[in-house]
Structure formats: structure tokens, C-alpha cells
Image 1: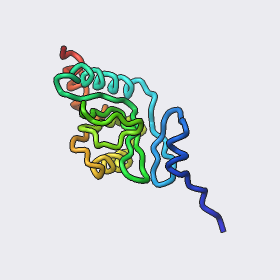
Image 2: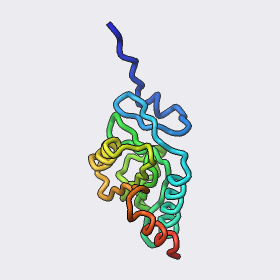
Image 3: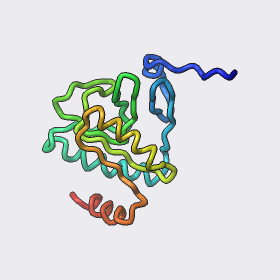
Image 4: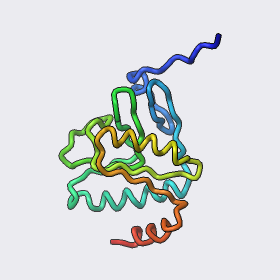
Length: 148
């Protein structure tokens, strides 16, 4: 009879560096799709907009942040906006105001929905899923990047 691979503890995960960083789900490591130009560019543009408005919106913007969505799960959010007065946590445990995930061409919607469901169950009230392959995306991205 085959035995299941040993599960990783949350403490082992939190004290290990991964490059690129990975999700931790119930004792298992889940790799993420990262590193492609379009994904990185979208992430940079959205981050810049949020950073530019941090004072007015009373937020702090973080990119590729570990967010502990439950006792046994940590997700890596592409972009998150935290309340300016939220505690500064090495691994975010206070629900962000917004979590933004950018789909890569290799990503599957069903897998992204699992990540978004974790943010929702944590108490995140604003969740965006940016799909660069959606027909209206290019127009919206041009408008966003041209705003002062």
C-alpha cells in the first residue's frame, strides 16, 4: 500500500523561503503561476495606482504578501490594500480591504476561485480577479495607466 507524503506544518512553511513564493493549503505546498511580462506589468500598474493614492484612501499597498486566511492556509496575494491603521504583520492575518489576483494565461478559473473563496472566508470584502484575456481588459488597462 502506498503511503501519503508527509504534510508540512504551518511553522515549517512560515520559516522557509520559496522562490517564487507558494501557497500553503492544509499541509501542502501549491505553486503559483508568476513571472510573465503581462502579469507583472498589470501588477505594477495596479500597485502604482494604489500606492499613489495611499494617503487619500488611508491604505497601505503590499505586493506578493503572505496572507494567513485560516489556521491551516496561507495565500500569496498579487496585490492587497491594507487599512493604514492595520497592525503591521509579517504574515498578514488582519483581513485586507481588498485582495487582487491577476490571472496568468496558464491559470484556471476553478483554481482562482478557490483562492478567492479563501479571501472571502477570511473576511475580505473586496476581491478582484483581473483577467488579461477578457475582451474589455485592454481598454480598461489603457485608461487606468493614463490616469495621473
